[in-house]
Image (cartoon, rainbow, N blue to C red):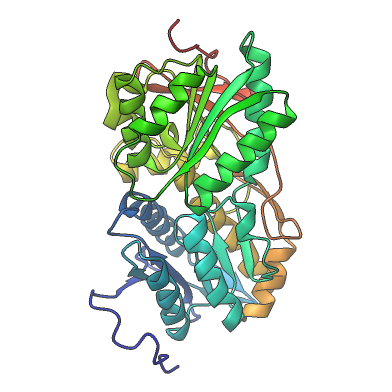
Length: 402
């Protein structure tokens, strides 16, 4: 298919068409092509590299097993990757490019905003888009029947956090909320304010900071003047590292400090060292869960073992878990669809109701995975401890300053 004039000449970097490697294959069909605009450079490069790692792991595993059977024919899988350099409009342009190069499905890039842009392109071409790292309900309220997300809704997380803290923190009554003015962090800040008020807490501070902010001292001084029991900050890793340092420098010591999604990423703890201790967060998945399901990783333990080997000994976080879970789900979707045409794949995705090593995947009417108990975590002695749900808890909540 001929490239659209709107994207012609845009790609100065090398296209990373990644033909998945594997052992001797018994496949006789054409490759299943999966488009993947990735933030391999720019502000979200760490997150983009996480997606890329599990894409490579999965493709190698699937192809080594002979590929995926669709309507009686075995097909290898192949990713068509491009670096969109953490530039939203470019992500949309590259989504169009991978479709023109034959992608039958697209894995959306990191984040709610960029996933939304990519999904709009997929809908135009009737190509399904699977968003494995987008949890804002605002991404899924556009009536796009070709968009499916494997994370649970933000509102589910914030209600659980408020309920947990009210049970565990004696006298908890006030909260200050400080969020980044970007799709996901803004959505989490808004959902937390609503959950706090519904839970009987008084919101004493609730402001947004602009993308690119390099100084939070004025806002933090205002928060300090309110002396809240709980401080809740949203943003991406480097935003939160800066905010945590300035909170410490200005002597803000609430009973509870929550940063979303900071401690969910190892880069947060590594960047702060002891200053990360005590910070709580929420995450969509933790490797200590024990699910069984379909695909090349039939258990959480089997994925964890492969990941440790592929990453040089690191633990996977929710980005790795959700994106790998989405891929094992696709193994099942391709088989059930019996076709590689976009509308057939969309229908199979919409009918999905399966268990995976990542947990259950059952899309609601808006395309989001259904709500379930999600882990609440805390950094203790520079290590991640799971506080909730009780079935996988590894520690009790430690209040700041105790």
